[in-house]
Image (tube, rainbow, N blue to C red; front, side, top):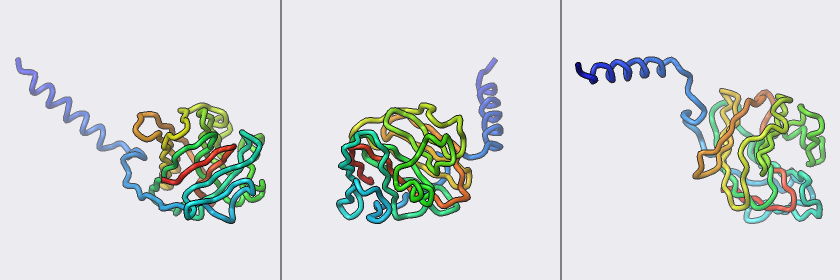
Length: 194
């Protein structure tokens, strides 16, 4: 009895099963967004350097979330990515610019949801403007000099974070009806757009 027909039929069955599956965010063609931090849309404790590629927070408040928003809005359709190199306590993700402006560039996460942000913090804490149960849930952690990539799939309404050169990643649903912008929350830290 030959095992070849068995392997061939299993392979054919798996191929048929996969053809009906939707593409995952990581398999979708993505466009790298060229970003720069805004000189205008930022907390007063943040300085922008290197032609908008580096943001440095000099606040005496070590863990307060001082925000800077990138100039570039994420298009409403498609899949987009961008990456940051971490230098200290940093929150990474996207936000509704209007809601961060209303909060004077210091997001109020005590609201549970509706704060306008989709973020991951150094210790892995998540913040979701859409789902209360995601707030304070844990994903993966990252430290100084790590590079974290962000993938936004506007069609699937997903954000995914991935630590570069690691298998650690996390994804969650986002609300895409409002305009979203890449953003950073900083304590006494710096971050560089890669």
